[in-house]
View 1: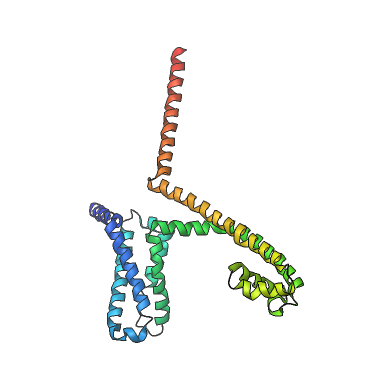
View 2: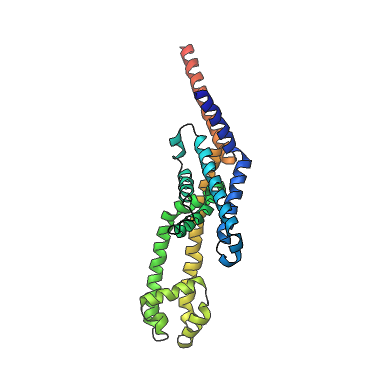
Length: 277
C-alpha cells in the first residue's frame, strides 16, 4: 500500500514541477479573469450565459483538481500548509466553490471569484518577489511616511496662516491646506489651480511651493523607491539561494567549499602537529 502511495505521490510531484502544468494553470487563471470581465457585460453576454456558467464550472473544477494534485505531491499534508502562498491558493480555491446559481450567495460568489486572478501572484516567482518586497518594505517606508506627514503638517500650518485670505476653500484651516498640498504633491493641475492664484497676492509664494515639491517629490519619493529596490535586491538574492541558481547561489556554494577546505586544512595541520610530537 505504501509503495503504491509513494508511486502516485512521485507522479504528482513530477506533474506539479512540470513547466507545462504551471503554464496550463496560468492560462486557466487568465481565462478565469476574462470570464469575470465578460460577466460585467450583462446584455451583450446574455445569449451565452449558459456557456459562461459552464466554463466557470469547468475552471472551478480544474482549480480544485490542481490544488488536490499539489497537496498529494507533498510527503506530508501539513507540509503543504507551511507555505503561505499554498494557504492563499487553498483559501481562494475553496471560496470559489460557492455556487453561482444560489440567488442569495451570487454576489458573494462573484466577488470571491474575482480574487482568483490573484493566483497569478502565487504562480509566478517574480510577482511573489515583488509582493514579498512590498510587504517587507512597509515598516521602513512607515518612517519615511511619518517624516512626510511632519513636513505636510508644517507646510500646511504655514500655508493656512499665509494664504487663508487668498482662498478659504484651499487654505481655510490646516486640514484643507494639507489636502491642497497633497494636490500639489501629485502635480494635478496645481499650477493653475493653486500656484498662480496665490502668486497674484503673494509674488514670492513660489518659494513656498518649490521647496515643498523639492522635499516631497524628489527627496522623499526617491527614499521610498530606494527602500523598495533594496528590499527587492535582498529578496532576489534569497530566491537565488533557495533555487540554487544565479550568482548568489554560486557565491554561497564557493563560500561553503572554502569553509570545507579550511576545515580540512585545520584537521591536517592538527594531525601533522601530533605526528611531529
